[in-house]
Length: 394
Image (tube, rainbow, N blue to C red; front, side):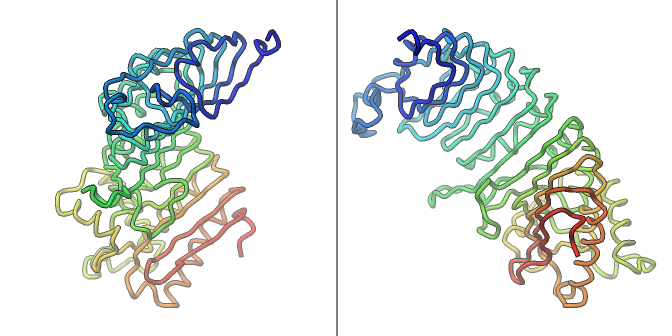
């Protein structure tokens, strides 16, 4: 038994909260566990009690007590709700928490996290309803937090769209925001999570970021109708990224962007090339910033995702974004996977070939070691695809 007390890492595939309260491992530094809260789940292989049985409904969940594990620095928990009364070890520096289904309607709380003065890394995934927005915003009090990853598989629009006051107030170096559309057929939720203009404004001020991921989920493929909607055009997204000069890794995956086409009669006659058009568009939209769209513009967000007629992205906007990405001085890894909608004239062979050449020329000037790029039109396939070091492209 004395040898067991020397353990520094432990993994439990299934363990009850009561059992963890009696865990005597004074040197334990890493704990990975699936934690059960109710009496009928004290043993992981025991048959689960039906949700409508009265015993579980009347039995409060067991509190998680980890304060006695004074050497614990890493905690990874799966399939477990987090209660406001839970007690974590104050020595924790990294928490990876997945809130999965437990057959109850208990609210998940961030209160135990707020008592961790040394917390540096936080990764939270929600398969059930996440904490209230007001609770999530309290994460701003964790002043040593430098890395945050929030994934909302429940599709409530909460972590991605409404907690910018929290992560925007922190000196973050790593930020990952994943959204996902609901699979529940009876849920009257929009097809995709919306990241509003106000959140993008906050993001543009996070100049300490070294790694940024905005994604519809790690495993979501484009054109399933499940994208992360941004209240920005290509050029406005470029304006958001331009100040983030410390970025080393950038992932933009399955993001639906606002249309930015300008009627031909409104285009300045002196803009003879796409490069000139891109420069004009960048200047115009940098001046406009990422101000909130009015009601009519907001309607186009859903139209962009559904690729309805009349909503198009311009080649100039794509060139603006690629140019700004290339200007980030420390960027070494890029994953760019964006659905686009081009006007029929832009999809003609000559115009499409010209756009490809311009995109390649723009990004060949970068020194990016790892690059995976894909721009694709739903009706016409790949508009542009490239991978590998940028210097190796033809």
